Image 1 (cartoon, one colour):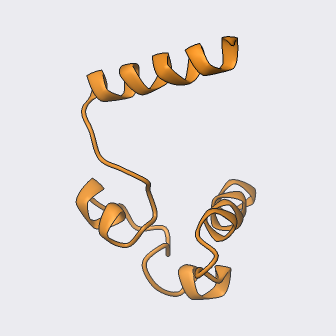
Image 2 (cartoon, rainbow, N blue to C red):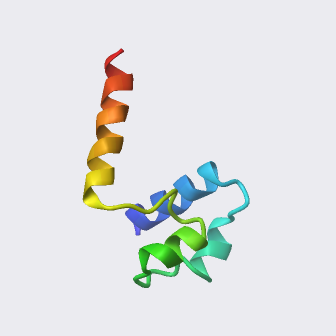
Length: 66
């Protein structure tokens, strides 16, 4: 539950329109979602493949190293 509550809080901070109780009782109720469904419901910031994740991590790493 601590991880789930942290996720809800993080989503609320990033997307101020979300209220934890609303999420808990609707789309973020603990069920497994497809990436497409999660993206459409603004639970994630984007979709991609493993190579996309590596490219993003490399970009972030270069920015952090500057």
